[in-house]
Length: 273
Image 1 (cartoon, rainbow, N blue to C red):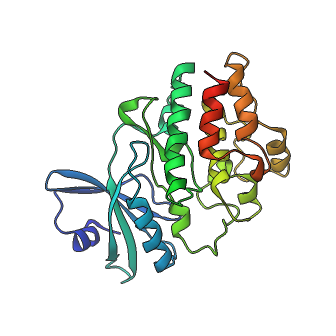
Image 2 (image 1 turned 90 degrees about the vertical axis):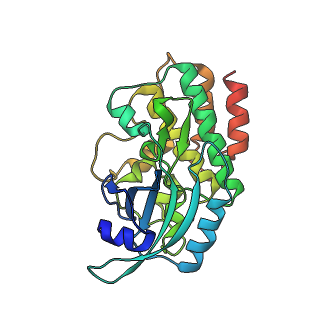
């Protein structure tokens, strides 16, 4: 995909550059038009048109500071192969994603981690209220506005739902994010709202301890992976006991026993005042 493809669909841009590496789902471009900075996400995988329209419309109804704002959609044609691809436009956020902060050795203090978790759950709650299940929550998909742990914003929302995968997640997941997948996703079962809660718990456990609670740098899921997931998440004893207790609930192996986003937020506020 080229800048010319982008401009043919969107019109002239003062700036247009691909950001990040192309994923199995598509490409993200940072564009500037009339002084306004936007993100353009182009879906290059197979997709179901009606589902795409329905779910992007749902995203556009979400109005939360904790979720990236989506404000447009359309289709573009790539010149090299003549294929048509859907895209949507959203705000472009500065501040770096959580993965970048983890890799830089930046770990939140207790108060920051509590505020971060509550804010992410608030965003997940808004997604679910709009009937959107993210299904690919991970550190790379959460931006910290201006590097502030208390101001996370969920991005790439619902992309897994925009792709025609017969309503189930393919295992192993393209791109390596199987490390944040809930057990039901790994079994190629239908994801639901509690699937996102699992991912939030894994991210929070990683931030609390400085390392992933299950993953040991294996390139593919090891044979004992489900055994590790069933064993539960552990974090350093220096972290509040309320957080450890909350992770037992949010990180429950059986999806139906995990709390909803609303309840998870209430539980955290109560268990970790």
